Image 1 (cartoon, rainbow, N blue to C red):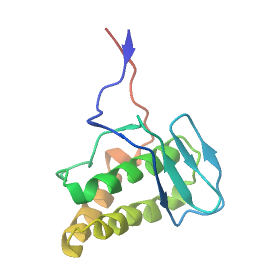
Image 2: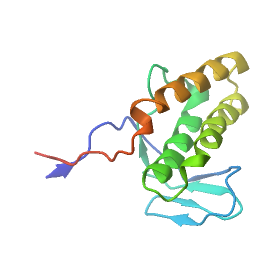
Image 3: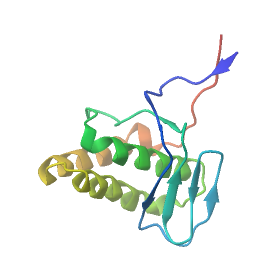
Length: 131
């Protein structure tokens, strides 16, 4: 059996969100980005919640899911690296729309940027494990 470690959450219902990332068409089994910036995340998409020192809050879960999808696109080379600050800003935008106090969202944005300059800045894929 082969499997991946590191996932805490699974999307229970397909959702779409408008992003500021325009002009790209990306489609995989569980996600899609349209040229108009619409990102669709399908039911069963797994993600690991907030990265680094940030605790998972209800107001940050959608933001962390969208951020993970877009970071995966960058890590796989489907989106260019120069979009990383825009992807990080999208986390802030969605968190505040979901009710997070803007000061907390700002601290989390800074934590994400700090995290992305270390481990997250290096392209990585999840290691396939065997049992």
